[in-house]
Length: 213
Image (cartoon, rainbow, N blue to C red; front, side, top):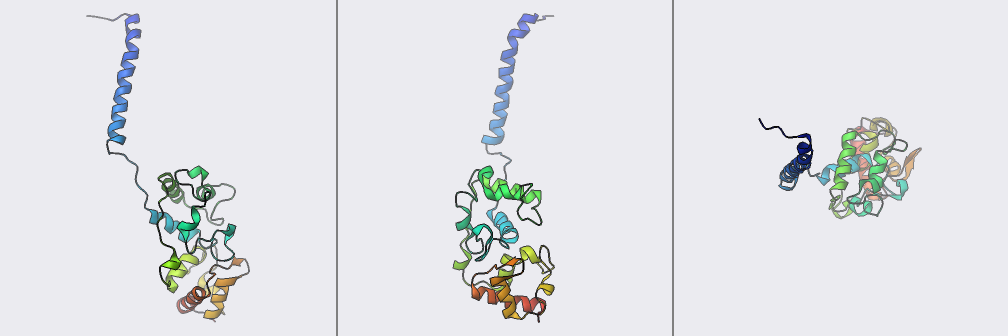
């Protein structure tokens, strides 16, 4: 039987490696460049929903944290060259803050890992954002305003979270009183709705749903 010498095997090794590398590249080409990539496109609405429920409670109104009001035109505000840099999650403050070990956002309840990963993938994929500003979409009803501006702290069903349950928060207040808190804040809570009409709408909704004074 033919048995190659050690020198022959050494000489053949580069050729074998080259063939193996060529095969690997071909396989990669088939998997990635041939249309069978495993990258899953991120739906912008999934990311905007996270921003609505987790960010707007603090980033809204005249006292918006960091002077970043996301309550009416989120797409118009996040592309400021710093908050979101399309294609660059590690240059985007939105992603850096949600994964920050020392100053996470939201501060009281850091995002689940899967939500942070979704934001990262969305930015990497170009950060598509074409939602029309809320103020241009017609008047919002109380449920929409509550979900957008209050649920992040008080819970989607008013059960409480970073802030008290709505039945407690609204105790002793009529619709106008709730509206005043929504617009101007109270205690450690900042004002979240700069628009007086929207504050009145959410005030009426809160009292109708959870009672008041």
